[in-house]
Each structure stands twice: as structure tokens, then as C-alpha cells.
Image (cartoon, rainbow, N blue to C red; front, side):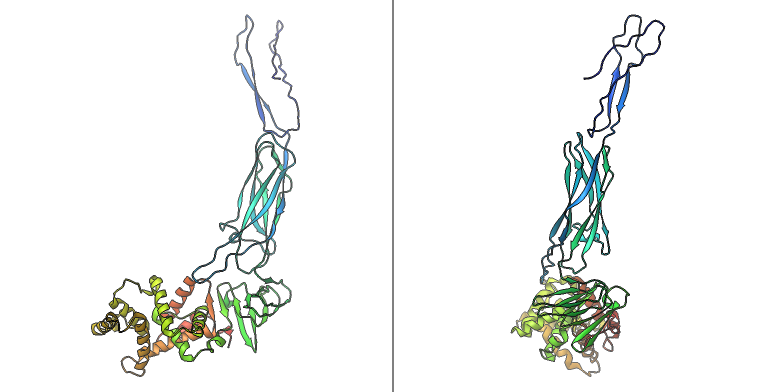
Length: 471
């Protein structure tokens, strides 16, 4: 009960002590205060300061500790990207338990933060939101257990198994820290991962993905569409064909070292990838058809193709589509990407014709077609004698008729050089990019530096002439 009583001063006394006995306990609670108040003075006594505060300092504490609950898991996968869709990422929850060794009669808090740790530390990009998670855990009165959930972002990127640390800090009053850290392990589930030793891998009938890491690895692909993954940028590796195999030598010591791969279709690097099958695939159609497909990229987009795109259209030819059918699909795509191509569904025939001349014939500015030429093709389109996609095919065909012409001979030379660059980029090297936007911007830039006399500037921008030899 709350103490009360009377203080009695004998004659001559000026000081007395009031003792308030506080009952000790082991209950975890906050520091508390109480007030002692004087009242009811006897006759002859007046009150001055009537109150004083007592503070009961909590000397009992709960010990907070963390342990893993479900924190050694596969990261999960994003949905596979398809044409027109980048795929969607899944979320995998990793859980940790924070426990108090005893309940409190008041609320308590403790903070936590996540950092990468170990030989392959997790990064912010491995977590939902792209940041390293942090927060606080709040225990209501009477609670002794809470759960921290760390959401890991699923993906299709091949990488080593990674680890992260969850650490407790900043306990509130009434809490001390016991075990402050717990480890989460994000298990690679996207392919076969090696270590820093010399490993040998053999593929299966499925589509296998290999991450050799350090050591001189030997990788044999199986019957599927196989990918070997490397950690650096493409131009940091020397790649050489040796019969039916390829060697991939990393210029950065201790990273991927030198691998030998056989029956592997794709090499994936940090910035670009290589399709090792493109030379053989291009040989399955006529050289004329290959050139015509590359010309469509020039005519519609004024760029050279990537390997995956060119491979897609080769499959279309094998599937029975004609070049005219494919040209219609290019036109539909060129309208969809109007910010890149300049084509739009609402543009006038005259504007369309001028862009065709600029892309195919490099005739713009002072070399732009005269009004009579524009009017001729405008009438052809308006009368239905030629479609817009048919016009591009016709202009591409007619450009080659000016070979050796003293005025316009440079036009077919320029077109031939863009075709040659397309062969080098998509077939000889088999280059692909990490995103459609990156491919478009890069290949437009490459095409822009081709001249009627040379492609070496574009080859230099690609930057692989000294390091990649696939044929």
C-alpha cells in the first residue's frame, strides 16, 4: 500500500527523516517515480516546500537475443523474361526470432540492421526495395518473442550462395543484449555453382547454367540450351575457339581464371553476353537472306542487330515466313518504338519517305531527296501500288544498283559496310545486351559511325577485336 504517516518534532528539534521502504523485485519495468507530500500541519507550524520526488531506478533487465528461425533458403526466381516482358521478381521471406529471457510489464524495443558478410556478402540489390533492411522490434508488456522478416528478392541471375548478418542494437531501458547477431544464407538456385578450385561440370538434358568462379574449370554442356556465367565485363576476358571448345581467360587474377567449355551455347558476362551458335545458325539460310535481315534493321532502325534478334528472325524464315512478312513486323515494331526510329502511325507519307532515305541511303540535309522523288513515292503509297514496308524493301534493293555510280556510289558502299558490321556484331561475335533499351542505344551508336570507307571505328567501340575469336 502507499505509505503515509506523521512526522513529530520534539521541543528543540529542527530535522526529522521520513523513510519510505520500496519493495524489491525481479520484474522488468521502467524506472518509476513517487511523490511525498506534507499536509495537515499542527498549530504553530506553517508549510513551506510541501513535496519531494523519489525515483525507483529499475535494476532488473530482460536479455534480448536473436536466432535464426528460417534463414537458410533458396532465393527464389523471377518469372522468366519473354519478348516484351522483363519478368517479375518473387519474394522469399527469411525469418529470425528475437527473444526476451523474461517478460516485462511495460513495452521494450530493440533495433536491428542487415549487412552483407562472409566470402560472398549479400548486397542491397539482393533485398526487396534495393536497400539493406533495418528497423526495430517492439515488445508489448508480457511478450517474450518477436519475429524479424527479411525479404529477399528472387532473380534469375547466376551468382554464388551469399550470406548476410542481422544485428541487434540500441536496446531501450530495461533491456540488455545477449546474442546480438544471426546469419542468413541466400542459396543460389539458378544454376550450378563452383568454388575457387579447379572444377569439372557436366550438363544434363535440361537447360543448365554454370557459375564456375575461381579455378580453371572444365564445363561440358548437356542436351539443353546451356549458359556459362562470368563475373566481369566482356572485354576483360580473352575468348578463343579450340576446335569444338572455347577457352575463356579472365584478365583479373583470382576471379574466374581460365575455363574450357564444350557444347555451351551462351557466355554471360556482367555487361553483355555471347551466343556461340550464331555462325552455325546463320549458315542455315542463304547469305542473301542474312544480308536482307540485317538490311531491315538498317532500314527501320538505322542500327545493326544483336544475336538474339537476328536468331529470332532466322527462325521465322525457317518457320515459313517471307521477307515481306518479316518486313511488316519490323514496320509494326518501328512504329511502337517511334522515339528511336522516328516512324509513327500518324506521320505523313512524305515524312515517312524522308526517314527511309535517311536510314537506308544516308540521304538527309543537303543530300535529302528532292521534292519530285518524295512526290513519286507518295503517289505510289497513296494509290496502293506499294506499302510502306514494301517501299523500304524497294529502296534497299535499288540502293545496290548505284554501285560505282560517280554521284551515288557511296550509298551502296555505306549500306554494304553496315551489313558487314551487322555480320561482325551479331554473327561473328554473337553479342547480346542486358536490356532492349541498352541494345537499341548501343547498336544505333555503332551504326552512326560507319562510313562508306570504313567500319573500324565501330569495331573499336565494340572493343573485342583483340580478345574474342569465336570463328
